[in-house]
Structures are given as structure tokens and as C-alpha cells.
Length: 254
Image 1 (cartoon, rainbow, N blue to C red):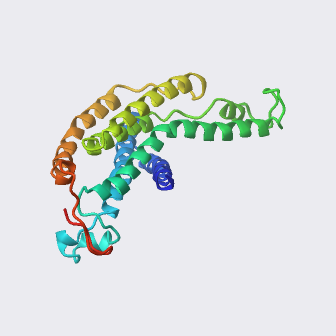
Image 2 (image 1 turned 135 degrees about the vertical axis):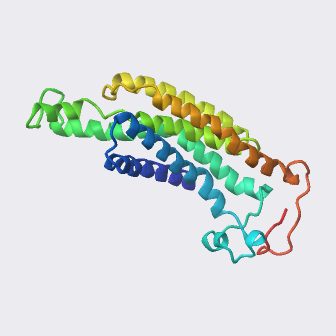
Image 3 (image 1 turned 180 degrees about the vertical axis):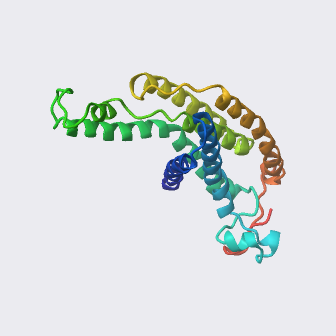
């Protein structure tokens, strides 16, 4: 479970870095900036969550003889196919990661709300009167008590991440669809409440980000098709026989 929370933590750091990076580009409109941010966050988190863990556990010796670039970069893996051991090691890690990602909005809110509330208590010197402040200006007082800005592009990226991972590996790991459904319910309830009582009033956006998200969702099944073909092509799914290996250091070929 520690690896799963580590991946979720890296996803959060990626989000912060990519948001600042896109802001530094100084794009012409807010909509264009949020669209770029949403796509880069989704791609970065998808690679970190669903791609790197697979490549890190993969063994490419039967693909390039152990001398190719893939074997030189990813040299610690032992899995050559979607075998029983792959689902025990990598598959369970992906499912735990997506479960952690599903409840992350609640963890993120609890963490940042605690920091914000502590900052407010420190500002009024731990008194109960919220009109007592140590801030020198009215705007500084408003910045503390008005709540954080609402990052809508991060929410769209989280939705795309759940859909992408569920479709990519859900053919042979159906619980990913249920995890994605629970993640959507948590995100919906969480965002409905926090937009009303926690965040600042978000700026007015047009429909371009929503349409872009729907366009990206349309391409996700095309990523699922080759993965499903590869996963279902392993005979271990249909048969109860697993080829044995003589030594622990041997690589299981299926």
C-alpha cells in the first residue's frame, strides 16, 4: 500500500509542477491555459500511474535479447507477459493506487483545510473572534478567509485518469470499473459541497474544456483495444495451468 500512496503523492507533485510550468508560458487566455494544464496533468499522471509501473516490472530479454534500450533502462523487471504473477504484483498495485486516487480528494481537502484553519487561528492569535486579525490590509485579510482558488482543470484530469486506467486494464481487472465509479461519486459530492462552502467563486469558463475532455474520452477505447487483445491472448486466463520454472532466477515465459 505504501507504493500506491507514493504514486499518488508523485501525481500530486506532478500536478503542482505542471500547473506552474503552464503558467510560466503566459498563454493568451485563461481557457487556453486551463486546457493545456488539463492535458499535461492527465498525460503525466497516466504515465506515472499506468505506464511506468508496468515498464519497471517488465523483462525485455526475450524482446531485444537484453541488449536493447528498453532492457538498459528497465533492467529490474521479471515479467514478460500478463501472467498470474503479474496480476499478483503489478495488478494489485494498480488497483490499490486507483483506490488511493479515488479517496485522494478527501485526503487533500482534510490536509489543506487543516493548514488553512491553522493559518486563520494563528492570524487571530487563537481567539474565537474572526474579525480580529494581524493582517496589515483588508485584501490580506480577504485572502486568508476567502478560501483557495478552484482548479477546475485538475478535476477534469482526475476524471480522465480514472477512465483511462479503468479502460486500459479493466478488461482483465473488472474491479477497476467499480473503483472508477466510486471515485466519480466521491468527486461529485466533494466538489458540489466545496464549491459552495470552501473555494472562492471560480471564474466563468466556456464549454471548450468540457468538449476537449469529451474528445479525449472518445480516444481512450482505442488504447483499450490493443491492451485487451494482449491480455486476453494469454492462455493462463482461460486455462488453470501455469508453467513451472526450475530456478528462482529463471524468467517465466508464457
